[in-house]
Length: 161
Image 1 (spheres, rainbow, N blue to C red):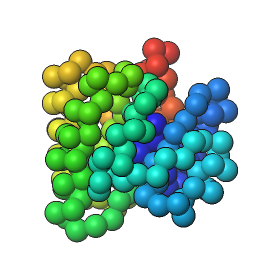
Image 2: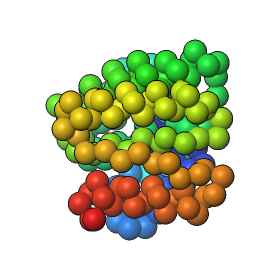
Image 3: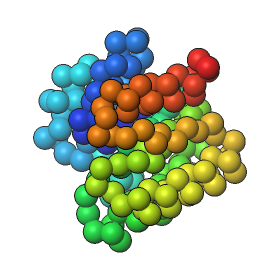
């Protein structure tokens, strides 16, 4: 499952689907459905701003990807998204089928200190709950390198290396 159905999320989904994986992508509104479904991914309307809208999206998910490095908002809103909301959502994965987590630790619009806090929160929770994790630090301004890094991280989480 990819939380965030923007361009990078859809590009990653397309590559994973070509490899034979089933992919679910979240979007905040129905407006994103067409672009997501065009990749072959399942669309789930829900937002980290209202975490309850995402809880059902975890059903049957093996790898959870938190790709929110390019969100926009105030510093306080972004910090909330990458700290308290991330923490609460990760705790929701404990009794699910989720067996791996990937955090986008580098973005285009989210301040570096916010992403660093998100990485700290995620590292603490995955360690406490023995959830394998990868932290994607590839530069999103280099799309091919970013995609290669994301695919490699997911492959590792799936046991491929």
